[in-house]
Structure formats: C-alpha cells, structure tokens
Image 1 (cartoon, rainbow, N blue to C red):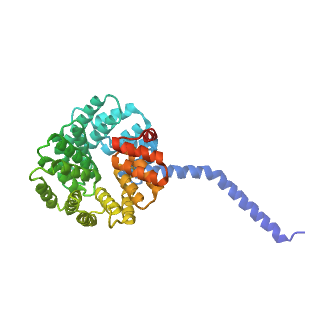
Image 2: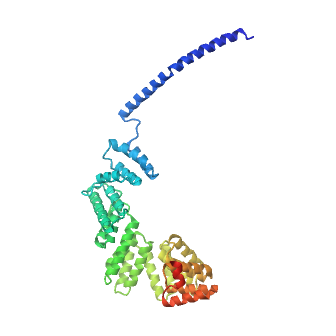
Image 3: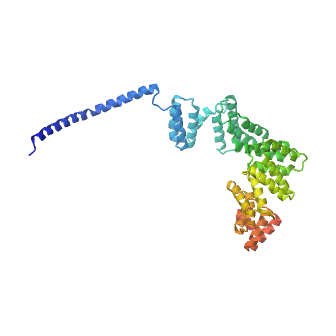
Length: 424
C-alpha cells in the first residue's frame, strides 16, 4: 500500500500534464506567429539592404560555380545580379560562358550581341570572347578569321576609347598580332606586338609575344636576304623578352648562318646583343664560331661561360653537352648526360636533343640505350650523323644487318626502309 504523500504527488503530475496539453494545443499558433514575425523582419531588413548577398558576393558565387562547371548554378546567381543591375557586364560575361557551357546558343548569342555588337565598340572582354568563340567554331577558315579580326578590332577600339586599365588588353593585342602574322601582314603584326610591350602597368603576354616576334623574324630572314637589320632588331627583341627561349635562340643561330659572311653582320649582331645585356648569347655565338673553326678548347670555354649566365637555354646546353660529351680528347660524357637529360626533361621529343643524348650514351658504351634513343631521334628528323651513330651502335650489339642499313642510308641521305615502316 502506497503512502499518503504519493497520492498528492500523483495529483501534481496530473495537473502538470493538463498544462502541457494546453500549451501543445497553442503551439501551432505560437509557431505561426514566430514565422510571421521572422518574415516581417526579413522584409524590413531587405528594404534596408541588410542581410542579403551583395552583387560582388553573388558574382563570386557565380564565378566559383563556373569553375566547377556547374552552369545552372552560375545562371541562378548571375540572374539575381542582372535582375536589379541589368547593366552589370561582369554578370553578363559569366552568363554568356554558362550558356556556352550548356550549349544554349540562343540566349548566349542574344546576351553577347548586347555586350559585343558588331557595329560599335562596347566592352573589350566581350569582343575578345566573341573572337575566341568564332575561331573555335570551325567553318570556313577565311570567313571565320575575318569575323574574328572584326571582333578584335572592336575590342582594340574599346580599349582605346575606354582607358580603364583593362586586364585583357595584352591578350587582345597578342591575338591581333597572331592573326596579322598568319595572313602575312607583318607590319601590323609588329605594331600589335609593340602595343603589348608599351602598355603601361600591364604584364605582357610573353609567350604569345615571343611566338609572333619569332614568326616575324623568320619571315624577315626568308624575304630580305640582303638586309639583316630588320631581322636583327626583331630577334634581339624576342631574346630580350626571354634569353632562354628555344625558338628565338634557334632563329638567332639560323640568321647567323645566313649572314655570317656579310660585311658588318657579326659586329652589328654582337653590338645589338650587348646593348640588351645578352652577354650569354654573345658567348654562345663565339663558342659556335670557335667550334666551326676547329678550336675545341676555346669553344668549350666560351660555352661554359655562356651556360653559367643562362643555364636554362636549351640550345646552349645542348651544344655544350654535345661538345664535352663526344669530343675526342678530354670528353666528360657523364657530365654531358646530366646536362642533356635536364634539357630533355623540359623539352621531350626534340630530335636534336635526343640525337645528342644518343651520341653521349654511345660514348658511355650504353649501346642498347643509345640505339633506342637514336631511333627516336631519327624518326623525328633523319640525318646522316644519326644513321652513322646507329650503325656503330648496332655493330657493337652484333646486329650487322641493321648496321649495314644505316650505313647505306647515311650515304644516300635517307631513312632505311625498316626505319620508315617503324615511324609511320
């Protein structure tokens, strides 16, 4: 039997249960009131502009979504911006890219027509984007290039009329230069490149600029055989941008071979390089000149000095490795292999560099490796020296039939049949 006090406690619990039940019945009304209060607060804050993401925050979200290739989310954020800021060009550009990613061409073209119309300069980044899309679209090459050139001209005009430090300026100039160069309009290509270099406060698009300058230099060398001065100015300008560039250095050597016996050429070339403090390249030319004259010790000394100044120049490193690795006396094939391996790590698949490595391996009597590397070099670019080196490698390996094929091919100046089939 329970004590009397427990009965009183039971009455107290019953009363508490009744109160809780009453509150439970009122709970929906309380929640509705809270929701209405929160909604009213949101309206007030929204009217004050408090608590909502800013345009910059929405654009940041859109940009991140575009990076993830979440095009639908990009559209959502950009539309929110454009709803109350319809002239926001950054949002329009993001929307164009999102529609392009979804291949929704109708809306994309409509927005692009507003941002980058074909009848007047409006927004340089949009005109640049239109040019890129045109060039990537295929179709009639001539028509596409003409349309892209028109878009780039409008971008150029927009840059000229709205000097706002547009970050795409260098890219516009570089693309125009490439199109001019492709059509053989070297004068305008050169002018476009000059705009890249002269734009104040901007970082040049160096590789694009280099490619155009080297293309101009090659054209000048082929068309103006008797006049080296325009070529020299162009190639030195390219090398001043990047003294270790493979193509620019190769063009320098090609020009020196073309004009080396022309009166005044060597003096002018040396003076032009030294004026830009390109001493390493002067030493490279001195080393190659000494090598062609049979002065190997002097050539090694000059190339060593040049390599210490511009160790990243692959043409220079290749010539040094070839000389010190394969010379008759005083050869250093192990050091030469380390140098040429460093070059190939950055420029794999280059026939000249593979050929040098094959010759150095042959000097080290690593004959099987030498044969493999020399075959790779030969497949890329056939030459008599490579055939002769392969003949020696296969002779050492006891493959006399292959050795004979390469000996005969060296004499004829062509690939042996077996090599032709392998490289197809």
